[in-house]
Image 1: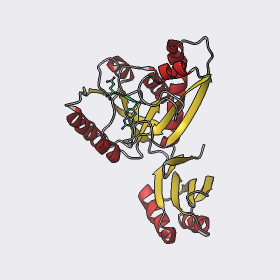
Image 2 (image 1 turned 180 degrees about the vertical axis):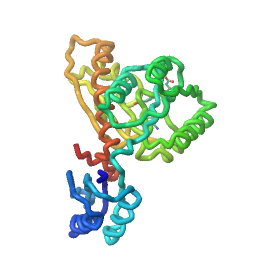
Image 3 (image 1 turned 120 degrees about the horizontal axis):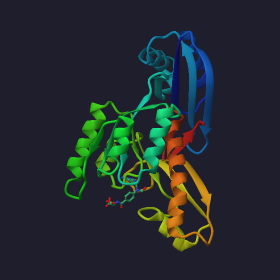
Length: 281
Ligand SMILES: Nc1nc2c(c(=O)[nH]1)N[C@@H](CN(C=O)c1ccc(C(=O)N[C@@H](CCC(=O)O)C(=O)O)cc1)CN2
């Protein structure tokens, strides 16, 4: 028996679950976990299901479920859970998110493969070397950004990458690159969005006198820090905290939020619905 995870999204209407169940039955399957949500704002139905089946490939499963659900024309994903998502990490000089992701990967806490790490600075290469993961330096300037982004896309193709993670990668991706990576690039922004977009959010927060700081993991879009939110968290602060102390406190929130977001994407627990996400935890 193989275990598969399926996600579907389609206009909400009666009969979707019955048709899906008939498809699983045709695959001699047994459902072991199921989550569903009907979004009233967009009248969209979302479902994530894990099931066991003797079917020997995700292609066979996909073909059967596509036929069973044909009347509903769903956006469908099917993955054999033993096929881990392949994640390309992008970093600059800050190491706290990279260290956390590499630790969780090494301990098996994060069910992903990391074929390559890309950076616009050489600073974090020793961490990649220590983890035994290839490190590719792609410097970026205003003039070289198109060439740099072409090299990144070559690596995405070469390593059959499913997800790009901007783990405090401090360069703004072009509109074209964002389109090509739509729904498969996650960024960690070091504030509790929608507050304090852009660079230096902790200094903005300190100046504003906030009592909560936070971090936000979101899909990357051309509009800076505007992408669909996957995960957020906060940390209490008070008048006695300097901006630098907020930066330090924020590091713990950033790495925890990013790792949770990457795990949920890698486990097919995130479904995009317009500019928002449905997250089956
Ligand atoms: N198209 C997008 N690209 C990126 C996003 C995004 O949401 N959409 N998020 C950023 C990360 N980030 C905030 O979370 C951020 C990073 C960098 C900057 C910035 O102004 N960078 C300067 C260069 C700074 C430097 O070289 O150190 C710039 O690019 O001119 C703002 C926000 C990642 N990319």
